Length: 161
Ligand SMILES: [Zn+2]
Ligand SMILES: [Zn+2]
Image (cartoon, rainbow, N blue to C red; front, side, top):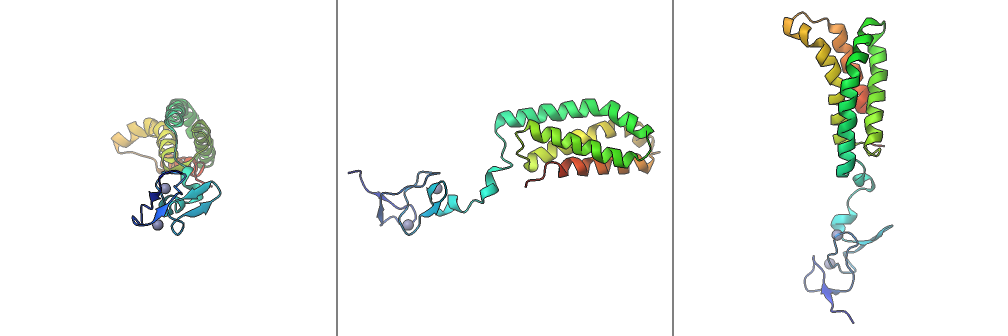
């Protein structure tokens, strides 16, 4: 027979059950049955979706690489966009595409990090092209509006579902 353990929340209670996540012993009163085993209240409290949005380091690296690729490839794309009518509309579509690409590169986890990478990657080409006007203080608001649409769309593409 294994040595009885004591509940980490009730040090006087003996138990043979431990949490499937953290391994801490828990008494029958504290334990929570989940679909992935018995857990302590701390770990059981985590929402189901808590794991979504947490990227593994290799997914994060791929997301950043995809972000850099989008930023670089986006410069000529944004340049062409500025010459077209409905720049804001096409920018939003391009931003959504960019965000989706980065989301897939990151294992479709989404979450705050993927949103940050997507937003930055989408904003970079616009900022590069708009920088001369910005510095000259003679900025046309239309490309800025297009950038806002693109950035929002990139973020939306990475929302957690
Ligand atoms: Zn636990
Ligand atoms: Zn307990």
